[in-house]
Image 1 (cartoon, rainbow, N blue to C red):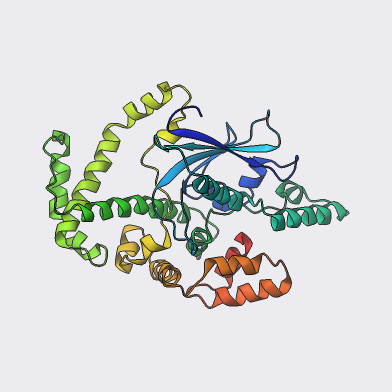
Image 2: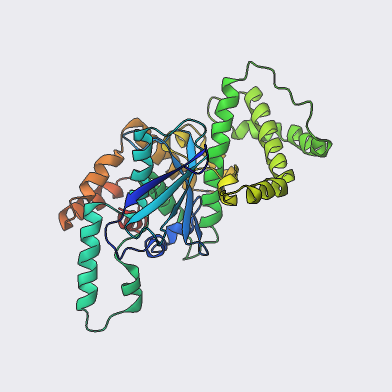
Length: 353
């Protein structure tokens, strides 16, 4: 353990020829926030949830992890966990983190068998195609099926471009941080909020916030009150400004800290929202704040169906583990019944399963 708020976990690799870069960069989803691939250090960063319930609802808190494959340990993948606090991770939390890493990089027995079969098919081709040889038979995916589903919805009608998908994905994960912060404010709404030492450079920002309170009220979460909107809008904008004002000093302190990487110190990096966090939002809030347009309703219905038990993510993944044409057809039929899951979205979700 390098520092009191860091710990190192290790995961046994499926075979000696396994390459992290090939596993991560195998599918375009690795480019979508909150994923971050560092080509220089050949390491993968993103926040992960410490706990997951049986339906994939992933409540806070989250921790930042760095996944890397040192040359001195060819059979072990390293998962460095940051911001754990002074309390050590429980064995269950460690298993949850490693389980999410294993899902992203496909370390299951089924995935290993599929990869070997793919390699055999490619090797038998009379004229081998380079991109098939470099693929490796493992498609990168998200820590949860829900995140894959939402990102596949975002891919619809993008005409092969990431100009829309990538920013929207970033907004969604940023929204997750704001939702968590807003819930905290609601719980503390009876306490007096003191902000007497906010810098004078925030005065104009506060004035603009007060002017826009009526619009914020219309877009607030279901069940919110005007008082809550005032607090959340005021505090969120102040937090944004404080992050901007302190960006250079934060980066500098991180670089100066021995053994710490700058990306691990960026507190602005939020995790992808869980179904439960999205289920209680208003459709117009998602449509306008995140630029989702018609996709907002589909994502909202998906989140609500998962929370209410209408869609069982674990059952869908269990069907996928059967690895047969019958299970593929069964999954395709089940997915097609979900609102907004046409042939294109279904096909992309199936690739991630």
